[in-house]
Length: 551
RNA sequence: GCCCCCGUAGCUCAGCUGGAUAGAGCGUCGGACUUCUAAUCCGAGGGUCGCAGGUUCGAAUCCUGCCGGGGGCGCCA
Image (cartoon, rainbow, N blue to C red; front, top):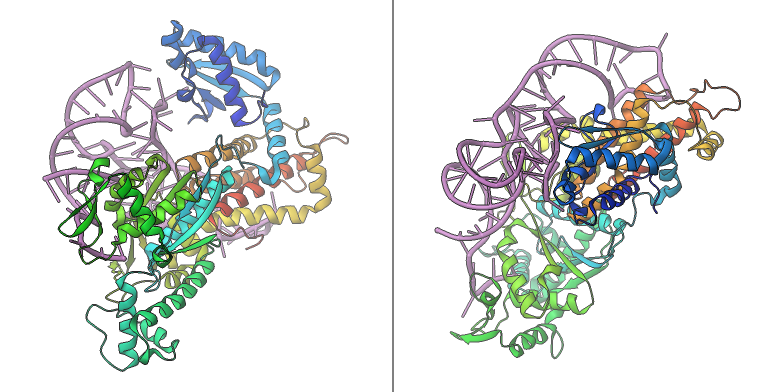
């Protein structure tokens, strides 16, 4: 039996006792154990009796009373009292002893607090950013990068085996076009109408000695290599952890048979393709797509779709349990056909997730900044970092759900940066760190030794802070399960607020007013500082935001 | 026309696999600096959760239909 002094443990205990009352009714998933909105509803409350009533054939309030009695028997003195409320809620009031034991559990877990509670660990590949290598990354890529990176961190921390991958579109006509644009500039000619006009292009010319005499395709490839190097630098500056793999589209066309040939052969063997109007089509409508899609054009060239099918098949053959693709909003129309193709290849599209990032609107002087590569006027990732810094940029982009559009006012973000919530959280961390330094290793060690022992009554701010700490593993679980790292940002802010309330109400250093031989009040509070510092730092780390020791 | 996302406080957004009196940040107004770090803190004000039905003991949350905003619907990538 798991300890009852963690949030998960307490929930398991409630579920077990509720199960006995209900005689096996299956309502486990729906039963909640939550921190109620009002203090007079107790430390935790559960709706178990409400849900069990129909199956048990008893009034909910009566069941709640029975469940409460059972919890008293199980928890003993740690449960101060309980109340049956409203239609049948059971409100639990936990004793100081329970809170102390819970804090001891947090500290015993140490750096692992919140880690690895995945019920079924999976081997997951997360593909993200995958910006076209024909130009610098803009703010949309920044959001994609921040999200993919944080999601990978959260999934890994939750216990999954995660690999990160960047897919490089280096095979299309766009690369040749880039080459043509560079050569034109190198020769002092005008860049073609449909070429690349961005102000980064002259910079590429300067880096390619023989640009004027090279073939456009060759020149394009060389330019792509330069762009990849620049992207790596930008991503590193943005604190995106290194990619495990860089997958090149061009490789999918190499070899005999090439991966593309291989994937198309599989589809043809299964009878999912047909020829029409000189092209090879995939019958994606068999798997829910709106219309069938072309794999090989009448000109004999493969479509981008064909490459992407080969790419996903390749990832499947590499043995991942799950593929997650983080895509821009403009790719959402692509989801149905990719899933259809995946099923046609024999895959289970439940194991292929496309997460669509909604747009980021940058607002400057009250107007939206347009971002078009062709027009050459966009805000790059580099610009964003220069303007508001890594921490603020990551925080802003990560603190909102991936499927909501973001309006980001750059002027505001820059001018108000000192009042940005990210600094508030960092400041709370710096405070804890500072106090622990001031206390010194010896006193902190003594605090950790005595944690869990009886001591002074807990202040309400201490109790609230402890419960906030206990919520962390559940937040990690939810953030992982729902692919929602922004929950960690919300949590980090709330935790920082609770810590600040504790800091305000509870003197830590020199708080010792107890008798000789009694566990010291200071120790009790220092232990809480250690747990707070560690948890704030961990939450920030999952977001890729720095947790400074001083500010 | 079809598909997807969104609509919650003045602004930006959480909360959404149903729970009790709907939250945060910013902004506004009023307070607190001989600090365990004021990059802070305290208080106040601010809401028909787009609209209308439905399901339920209970709906911001689930279902249906509308309205509004955004995105996508190539033998482009």
